[in-house]
Amino acid sequence: MTAQQRIRDLTLQLNRYAREYYTLDAPTVPDSEYDRLFRELEALEAEYPQFRLPESPTQRVGGAVLDGFETVVHAVPMLSLNNAFSPRDYDTGAFDHAEFLAFDERVCKELGVAQTEYAVEPKFDGLAVSLLYQNGILVQAATRGDGTTGENVTENIKTVRNIPLKLHGDTLPEMMEVRGEVLMLKADFAALNERQLAAGQKPFANPRNAAAGSLRQLDSKITAQRKLHFFAYGIAQLAGIPRQPESHIEELALLGELGFSLPYGYFGVYTGAAAVLREYERLAEHRPNLPYEIDGMVVKVNSLAEQRQLGFVSRAPRWAVAHKFPAEEALTTVEAIDVQV
Ligand code: NAD
Image 1 (cartoon, rainbow, N blue to C red):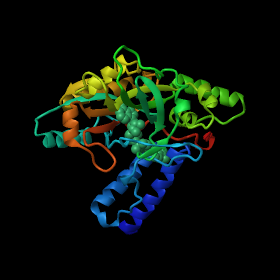
Image 2: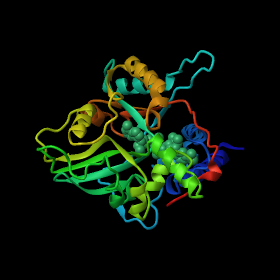
Image 3: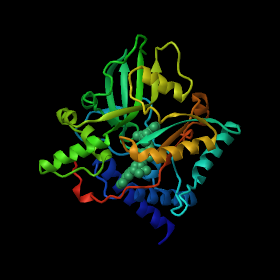
């Protein structure tokens, strides 16, 4: 098979998987398989850029908007993240962090520094949403969609109990757009699947699909019956506040003060790659004990000025990386997925 044919086949196959995953909330292959094929396509496209197709998944974010939802055009695009994998040696248990180290090297080179400060936090395995507050009141919520246009899920989001409908505190921003992840806690997922089985309905494949299927319901009463949870991880727009945050960690602190849930005990600032990697290994060890699923750690350059200096590539920021954990999932329940959208 020629490189051109392989690129065409991979593009078709990955676009089908992406539609099943993002639009239908019903994946048919494990994420690790999707990631493997995605990387093969990225490598081939880098070698043969003349064969890259305009509809290549490497050039796009997420999936399509479902019929039935009003759409929201994002004022600031909702991007993806580039990945760094750390394969583990089964005999010694040692991680190979070469990909993360290459990310750190690129960042430091671009910034002209020997080392920099990173904010690290869990990579929540749910779905991204944007929440818009005006004068402290939640006025709009949207899914990421294709990164440019998302689904208006305001009514559904209002049923998520740990999302403040009104921000806490005395000095509220005139306008703020919060970004974060909606997910289902492992215990709530297990209880939901028990109820599904007891009612003679099919169980959900995993908490991520259950969360996505529950949030993207046309009837918000169904969303209200599913226990969803929200963790904030960033601010996309902020106006009318005495002092603007200057770092990612200051953004998180502000979000905490305004009433958002943060992953306490699992986020912080670390200087240099070695300190970040120690935190990665700690988080990988704690992963099974967390009440929610995570598939890695997100590492972001902490200074917002440095983030601006680094900028973006087509579908992801250059100042952040999703440092993924080795795959632990296998999609054993494909046929049992209930697509409730
Ligand atoms: P991603 O999950 O690789 O990274 C971007 C997303 O990370 C953001 O949109 C946000 O939702 C999330 N995120 C979680 N915690 C965050 C934090 N602390 N800070 C910032 N963002 C955070 O993005 P993607 O492009 O949506 O998905 C790609 C992944 O989805 C693939 O790596 C693959 O594993 C999976 N996928 C699987 C299939 C399949 O068929 N199984 C198909 C498509 C995609």
